[in-house]
Length: 346
Image (cartoon, rainbow, N blue to C red; front, top):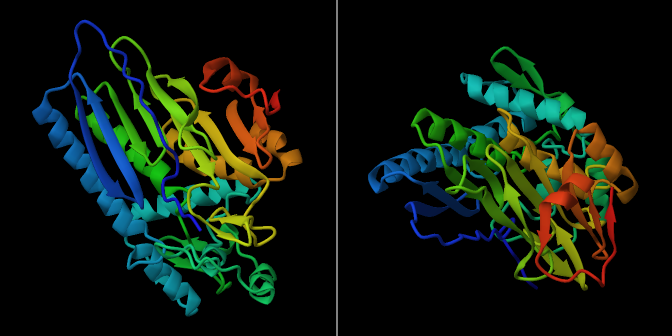
C-alpha cells in the first residue's frame, strides 16, 4: 500500500537570462504539506522578514482551523456533538464559516465541509489513514442524516446545530484561504513579485522578471508533470487528486475526497485542476471549487463548471481520458505525449 501526502507536485521552470534578479526561497511543512514561498527582486533581508510573517500566519491558521487536533474548530465540533452552543469571539472565524456556507450552496454541496464525521470514518482524520473500508452500516447511518453547512446556525457570535452529526472540516478550504492571506501580507509590505505554493495550491503575485510565473501540473499516475502553464499576475491554481491522501484495499484506491451523496470516496476522476482569475478570494475559490469538479459524476462536471464560472479547468478521468475547457487548452503546454488518451475540449 502506498500513501502520498502531497496535493500536487509543482515544477517551476526558471528561465536563465544574462542578468538574474535575486529569488529568495523559503520552505516549511504546514497544513500537512510542503509550503514554498518564492520572492523575486527584493533584498534577502526584506524577503526573509516577510516570509517569516507569512509562515507565522500560516501556523496560526493551521492551529486555528485544524479539524481533529486541539483547535477552535475541533472545540466547536465537540460542543455541537454534545448538543451545546459554541461561543466565538472572533469575526474572522464567522467570516470563514459564512464563506464556506456560500461556497457549499453554490456547488450544490459537492463541496461540503460539514461531513467531517464521514471523513473521519474513512480514517482521514489522522496522519496515516486506517487503510480499511468502513462497514456499510456505519456509512449508511451517517448518510441517513447527512449534514450540510445549512445545519450550522450563526447567531451573532454563537454557533449551534440541531444535527449532532455536524462536524466541520475545512481541509478543502484552509490552504486556499491561506493563499489569500499571503497575498494581503505581500501587498501590505510592498512585494510586487512572488509565488506562494501550498502543496499545489498556488497564487502568482506579479511576475518572474519579464515573464509570468510558470508552474507544472502533476501527472496523477506518474512522478512528473503532465503539463505546464503560465500563471498570470493575481491568478490562482488548485488541484484535487486521488493521489494525495489515499489507501489501497484489494487493488482499489480510496482517497480522502468523499462524495457527500454516496458516503464513499469519489472514483470517477484522478485529478481536477482549475485556474481562477484575480479576486479577493481567488485562493479560496481555487481550493474549494476543484472538489466539485473532481467529485461530481462525469455528466455533471461541465454543468457545474459553467454554474461556478470556472472557465479554466482540466479533469483527468478515472480511465485517464481528459476533459479540458477551451481556454485551458489554449493556455496549457503538454509535457508528454497523450496520444493514448482521449482529450475532449469543451
